[in-house]
Amino acid sequence: MKTIIFIGTNKSGSSREAIRAAERLGYFTVLFTNNEKQIKQRKEYVDVHEMIFVDTTNLASMRKEIRTLLTKGNVVMTIVSFVDSNVARALKLCEEFCPNGTSSDAVDIMENKARTRASLREFPFSPRFITIHPKAKLEPSIIEPLPGFPLIVKSSSSTGSKDVLRAANLEELKQHIRKFTEKDPNESIIIEEFIEGDQYLVEAVVHDREIQIAGVIRQEITYGKRFIITGYGVLAIVPKQLNDSIMEVLNTIIAKFDIRNGALHLEMRLTKNGWRLIEINPRISGGAMNNMLKAAFGFDLVEETLKLYLGEMPSLVQKQRNFVFTQYVIIEQKGILERVTGKKRARKSPGVVEVYVKPRKGTLLTPPLSMGHRYAYVIAKGTTLEMAESLAKKAAEEIQFHLKQ
Image: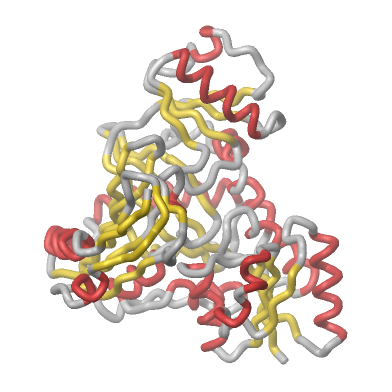
């Protein structure tokens, strides 16, 4: 039977929707997971036809499981991942068992923030930065190439805002570096200039070196202990000048990394001197991204990405054009969730396309230290981006988390 192997998934969001899309396309779905909770909740993953508990950081262990599947008669069509840090491993295995014209080399670079920065150092969209070893002594002279405080400090493998911190002075900078060193004494640390400007996310796929932009999304950032994206506004119409400047950055990156086929998203800030690249990830964004693009344009990006990795041509033809805004809900105090109210009212609110609430009763909720600490979202559409944003925010206000301190 024609099989797609997925390496890792979240319970919801783009990675889970990719599995559902594979089932919808008629493939036998196999999930490699190292998450014991998913094994215990096996019945909740009805779209996963076979779930295999394996160390997803160990290529040899996964090779063994793939060979077992082959001996049982599974015809492995592709091996993919839509989850941080698993994308390169999935492509490495795909190159061995079911080559499809993709390369893991570029993904290896993109999964390492220090290598990404070094590779793109020469281009004007690259922020000023330095990379230091965590054991190096931080002298004031080291940061002289940078424009001054505030500065951004991040680990080389940072994902989902977990290891991205803002330093207002030298003492804070030293504290952040000590924290990263304690967490991983061998992980390189990036120190870079803080970029002012509106932040945008660009979703794209590359087929035979041709770029298709799936969406341009303006991001709303909430500043607390971390930089948390709490709002996403999908531009139904992208001004030509903006689109051309984005394509220029994308073309440069595709050429530099020699990407023939693949999916990626960029986070960039638009400054008075043009774009500055915040980060690149070799996959579609997680969370509600697939559903908000579907609400905006009518295509299913994870399904089209799967087609890409199956050797087919993806199609991002817009079947509709709506302005869409997604409002995430975070909390300000820590506590045990007793109940959630307002979900039905939010769903019945004008313009609302989807309401999703993540945690169950009894879950410990905290103020956000990563993107994983966003506990609900509302997707709404409107005739303008301002209308979509207003409708999403108003509906999101209906959702209340009642906590036991």
